[in-house]
Length: 337
Image 1 (tube, rainbow, N blue to C red):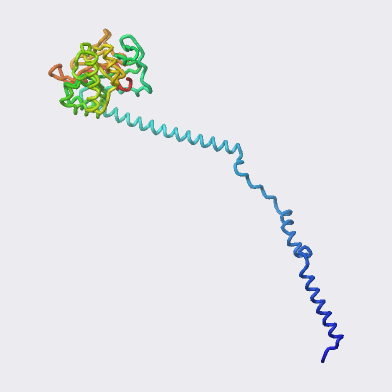
Image 2: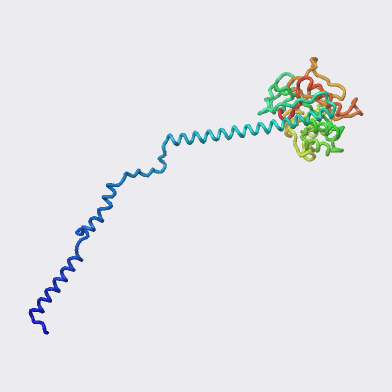
């Protein structure tokens, strides 16, 4: 059936209405949709109705009291650690000292000593000032001081051995086993046949110092002659022992200002003399009280039965007996001078 013109008009109008309705729906704003409004507002509503959230802390804004407490705790931990380390070190030192005591007691018995030699106290933190003090310390401006008694209140004395004629291996063994400190003042012409003996002494802790080339009375030499005797021996000891000594003893204890100037020119800083002299059979004292005093320097020599009434071990045994009986210990001279 063919539609009439009127029917065609109705169909065109209906299609136009459908198209207009579709266009209106497509062009509507999201805010015009109740569903979209609810969805858009929901987050705001949830934030308003939800629980309070604490603000995040700002970096570096720690509580001052908590920070101070943490620092105090760290400091206390450090103090505790230091205290524990100090206790451990003290215990180790005490154990080592006991080992040394047992070894020295056994050595004293082997070497026929009536009592174990006393141990010297710890060396001073700083060496004593060598100010003028009568005959004990003699000073002149610009010259090495002459020292017969080291300024100290420690109950210590010092054993020094001159020249180098006798090279007794038993003496070397005795001081090693007892742990006794001594200082050697070596003359070249006497040591030269066997400098190895003095190298061995130095290896076991004996300090080696200068006692000239030929053991001459320096007062009778020219300034140049004194310089050769002292400074050439400095070079010999550097070559033979590996040390350039800072201590020098003039032969016979005799010197002039020229002696001291020559010694100073090649590195000498002090000239130790002595107040007592030890032999294999006796101890000779400078003063009538026949006693040791703190800081006294004892002289002896590398000698043996050919010139002494006994050996170097006899000399050391006698020295240790007298020093110990008077309540003194032998100490290392270089710790004080």
